[in-house]
Image 1 (cartoon, rainbow, N blue to C red):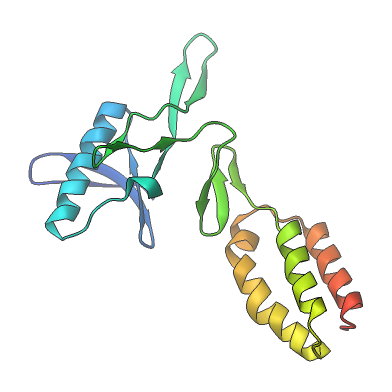
Image 2: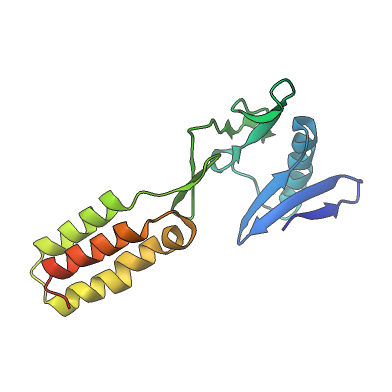
Length: 170
């Protein structure tokens, strides 16, 4: 949900929030820099400071001839004197254990699951202990990716079938 807030000096900040994260939205780079400066100064009044290494810029421009939007990876957004990273078409940004980018959310669990299952295979555990580790450690680590990412049902079924056979579960 997009929200707007007008500061005392008349600066209008358009933003979206999720938990402790904030997205500033503007139709121009100049307007966005003004919003970043205003937001940063309000945070400074509370003793807080923006970290430019944790932020990214996703800027779209219009190609009038082709009548389409194009991604501009060259960021002009400055936070505390540092230009923040601009995302290109193939770039991603880690958010909630997911790789988010211009093409959407991406997360490959194949290697992560193989490594986890390999680790608990090497340790002499009872089957119920392996189930406990998968239920209480593996699935919570994948929670955001399973809910928000594009995990295919067939891949998840294959992983659970393989682990069930390998650990004599079910």
